[in-house]
Length: 253
Image (tube, rainbow, N blue to C red):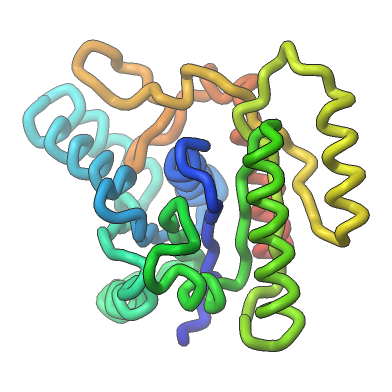
């Protein structure tokens, strides 16, 4: 395998915003932190991140305004948009290596957006080759139990036995409702600590802004694979704090 850092966002439950978080974290590390990033969208057949890139590219091609905006962005950034490829869990590693070998500027970090179930072919094998895995969960008993089951299984059967190259597996809260009592999360986190599992300190809120894509009608953007997230929209989203936290874990900086 290559020397790039392989990072996966994985969960056993769909509909928890995994693809959105992958896109936002990749965006932040590429556009703000200055890392060369690539994304392998393995979440077939929907390929949400790859589809988002295609829609944004089409919009830029057809709009003078967005074409000028993109040119100015790339001029300031002094690099192009990070590559996004569509794959699946079975072929993800091979496709990632082909992507890396074909890039003039090698990525520092390759993000893998995995399917929402471990039952999909190739998921466990691909996850075993990740350097770091981040598993999102919401404060729902079924989601928490499923995520803890996955994390314990992966750690006990793969990480501790040397069958995985994974250096760290971290859980994190997402879709946090501000009206929920913080004590609920504390109870869950006590259980997580007792299991010897790690959890990020950043909690991502449940916010409609996470679905704010680029469009002709709406010039400001939150979720994008090309343009940086609007600074005004970052406030209160937790994405800056979340991205900084995972960046420190995977790069040490």
